[in-house]
Amino acid sequence: MQLAVTLPASDIERAKDWYERVLRIEPVRTLDSGSYLYDVEGTALLIYQSEFAGTNQATAAGIGVDDVEQTVAELRSRGAVFEEYDLPDMHTVDGIFTAPTGEKMAWLKDSEGNILSFAAM
Image 1 (cartoon, one colour):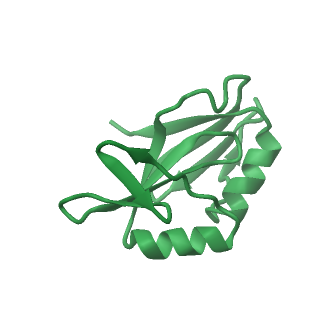
Image 2: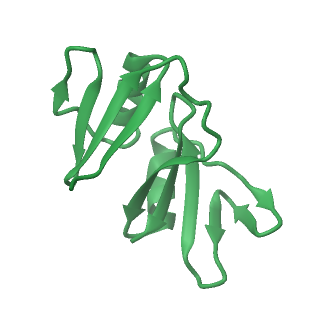
């Protein structure tokens, strides 16, 4: 079994540019449909054209990182804007949520409104 992540884009070229510029990943293949296929450390990521991009209000994909604070700083330097949440059980500070266990997480929206999370793995 192999996991693949699929994310919609209302503007496929804008999405491709965002993933290259902010996450620094490049497609390994362009499909006949115009979709872009990425290989992110062995996980397939497919960005495809869809009028429904950005309509999911939950996390669409999670990305494991070594250091959340460092990743947030790096991605901000490339133009990423992290979400701020103030919920009963979750409050972010400068875009980062620290769980009672000490685990840190951060969320951002890609150019198409898809929510991506970053957590130490």
